[in-house]
Image (cartoon, rainbow, N blue to C red):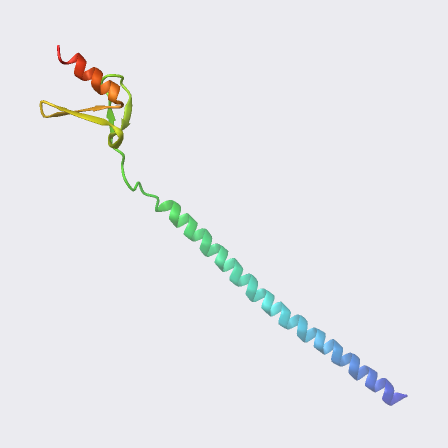
Length: 105
C-alpha cells in the first residue's frame, strides 16, 4: 500500500511539474508576443505621426481670374487668348467669345 501511494504521488508530482513547466513556457511566449505587438504598434504610430509631419504641398495650383464673369479657376483649366502679347484667361469658350466681341469695337 505504501508503494502504491508513492507511485500515485510520483504521478501526481509529474503532472503538477508538467503543468508548471507548461504555464511558465506559455507565459514567456505570451510575453514575447505581447512585447512584439506593442513594439509594432508603437512603430506604426510613430510612422503615422511622421507622415503627418511630412505632409507637403506637392504642387501649388496657380489660379487665374476670368475678367468677363469674375470667376477664379486653375490656370490649367482656363481658355487662353493672347492679345498684344498679354495672356487673357477665361473659364469658358463663351466668356472668351464675349471678350473678343466686346473688344472689337
